Amino acid sequence: MAKGMLEIKRQIKSVQSTKQITKAMEMVAAAKLRRAQEAAQAARPYADKLKEVVNSIAAGTQSAQHPMLVKRPIKKTGYLIITSDRGLKGGYNANVIRKLMDTIAERHRSTDEYVLFVIGRKGRDYFRRRGLPIVEDVTEVPDSPTFADVKTIAYKAVQYFEEGQYDELNLFYNEFINAITQTPVEKRLLPLEDNAVSGAKAVQATATYEYEPDADTVLAHLLPKYAETLIYSAVLDAKASEFGAQMTAMGSATKNATKMISSLTLTYNRARQAAITQEISEIVAGASAQA
Picture 1 (spheres, one colour):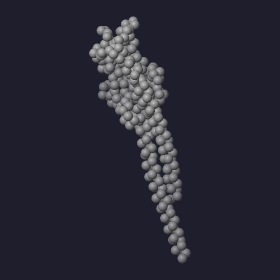
Picture 2 (cartoon, helix red, strand yellow):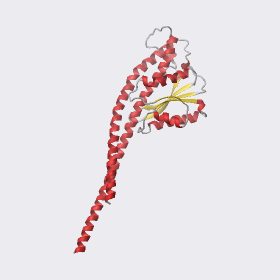
Picture 3 (spheres, rainbow, N blue to C red):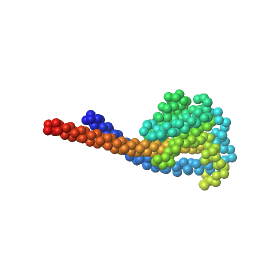
Picture 4 (cartoon, rainbow, N blue to C red):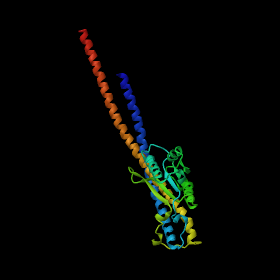
């Protein structure tokens, strides 16, 4: 009985240590979540202004036939997926990876029909193990990413579309709803026909711009920057989702640890009570025998 009680005490101490770790990770994730939300909000004015300028140029030019604006028959597709570098995020990585794999299984019969751009070690390792065609990957993205951290992969994803290496580029990531809810989504990034630039002919410009050397040349330079900005905005949104998922997962782990400690403590008290009762019974039996 004593051996069993010692084992229970060791289990209680072990769970208590785990609880301290998960509680600390929950608090750290909450702090990072606030910063990630602020970063995402701070990036929106730039993206909105760039969108306004692009709309204004596209509405004012009569020959906006840039490759990023033209929809063409889809023979090959590019996918850019955003995951995390580490685990302990609940279903954050599994949900978005599953959504992408279901999409690939539904749309493609061969790996020759698509290519992958991957942000995050979890996604990269998952696709590598399955031999899927990864063109470019980025890992160790900091908790507060700057555009420079994802510039290379964003530039290549947009450039390859311009060069015609694939006919469509789709973005997969966890969209931040709130600290508890993160929804895996698919958004078509290129061509921009169905995005904000579509219907730009009908957009009323909010300001008058003068272009040097001409509107078409400026548009050709701005459209790739705009697409890269959309990718960066998605990375910021995904970071907020990542910390929200981690905070929720660690909160649930802390609650489960608390319940486990209560259950083990109850088991320990019952075992201790049984041991005391047995000792009393042995003493009474010994006294009766002597009498």
